Amino acid sequence: MANWLLLITNLPGRNQTLRMRIWRALKAAGAGLMRDGVYVLPNSAAARRVLEEQGEDIKTGGGQAQIVSFNAETTEQNAALTGMFDRTAEYGEVTERLADLKGELPKLREPEARQKLATIGREVAAIIARDFFPGEPRKQMEGMLKDAAAAVDGRFAPDEPHAARQKKLRRLDRKDFRGRTWATREHLWVDRVASAWLIRRFIDPDAKFPWLKRTADCPKRAIGFDFDGAQFTHVDSKVTFEVLLMSFGLEHDPGLARLGQLVHHLDVGGIPTADGPGSATILTGIREIQHDDHALMKAMSPVLDSLYKAYGRPKEN
Image (cartoon, rainbow, N blue to C red; front, side, top):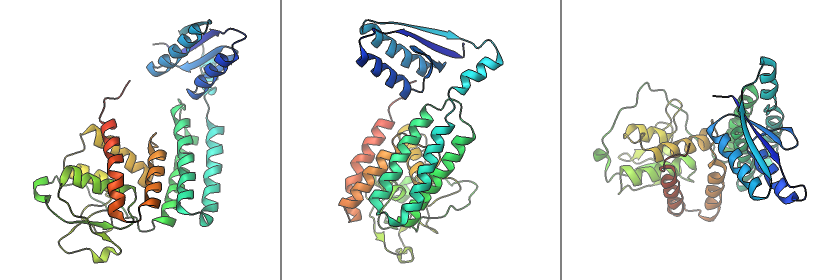
């Protein structure tokens, strides 16, 4: 298969609206501009769909469009084409904004801090989507994003659990965990509210939840989750939600697996997800409205139900 795709266009000169719409769409897709009306992308099924869609739009508007696939003739030419997709400067702008956020964090209230972090997270996800040749700048930016998220959590959720070390999680039978009391820390955030939803939805439909001011006050017969010393908490690189999935044989459910990726990113960082910033914003807003954790969980359950339903659909190639 050829390594590159070209879109060669000839747009009606007076149709500036069409010209601007095509330019914006191709820029958002990460296409490189070879010259006026000639765009290039690394060859993939997704790239071809983008170019075909814009080509059809151009033809509908009275213009002409051709898609050409090709391989670079020399190593130097391939390097020059690859260089058109260098996102170093874009990552640099994001890392500066993350540094600014960490500096102003002591002055911010939680909704504002999380909104700023969510906005940057959306920008990061957009850059990653068009970063076809990731390298060290992306790794550096992801590290800074993780650090900034940890700084925000450290200020507003300072009692997050530390990861325990365990070679293999033991498979458990859900029948042994029915009608139980499950306890976690109050003032729910991502991993706790998602884990509580998972418990009630897939493990223990009759679960009762006391929200603890101090983990030392956890009832003796309660099953603790998402705090140091709890039966279910962070293990190695897995957050509590992922530990529950593995423990109860739920990790092969595609909707839950993708939801686990979202919870992981929002809780401890790592690979950004497209829905992450918006989900964090929704939860932050609900926490501002619902100061009671039972009400917060009730309000978040339809959100998590909807994400699970959407994530369970087959992915488009």
